[in-house]
Amino acid sequence: DVRLVESGGGLVQPGGSLRLSCAASGFSFPTSWMAWVRQAPGKGLEWVANIKEDGGERNYVDSVKGRFTIYRDNAKNSLYLQLRSLRVEDTAIYYCVRDTSVELDKMWFDALDTWGQGTVVSVSS
Amino acid sequence: AIQMTQSPSSLSASVGDRVILICRASQGIRSDLGWYQQKPGKAPKLLLYGGSNIQGGVPSRFSGSGSGTEFTLTIDSLQPEDSATYYCLQDYSYPRTFGQGTKVEV
Image 1 (cartoon, rainbow over the protein chains, first blue to last red):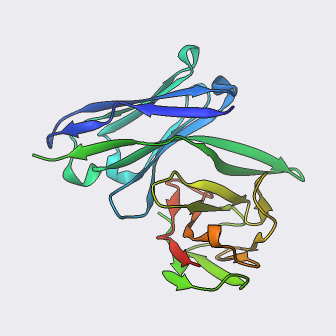
Image 2 (cartoon, one colour):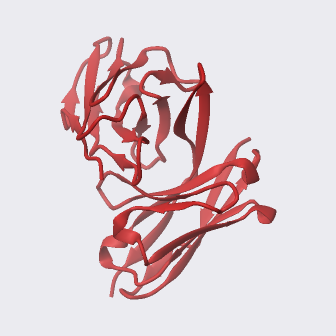
């Protein structure tokens, strides 16, 4: 079974830090791009960041650049998101997601095909 | 960043109806678009990728079309379990961006 399990969420004060973890199983983690997507309470989905298989490329949404760091440990089949300088507006469910590429007729398409159950981050004083 | 706009924001339809959800991109994104379904309290689920390619295990009543700036998700013969919020996501460029979602009530 392909599975992603997040952990590390919690309540933190504005300006604080937190590290989210995601344990992957059931697929070849070292050969998979991975991503984080978040959802504020009662709001829509927001793509946060992704990382290449070897960690050599990382992309972020502007609102978290310089504050969040995505990284991975392929030996542990784990993905991480380090959150720093947290703001109230970072309050959300954070989902760990597998970012797959599919080839069809010599064309490549991306898809977020596997999602964890999410971990809740609450930023409040 | 590319802006994705979905319409309508919500709709109500009956079992057996056909519904069409629209997603528009602020610039051309070829066919680099996915559709996701999210039920309350659950993680999103991939329905289609590449604009029109159905993900394994997804019922065939779901279909997608479009390229460039306008895309549609069609649900034929709507079922009670299709009550959910549907999101489009462009994967043409970074940062990836989602539409604001369309809530479907059956």
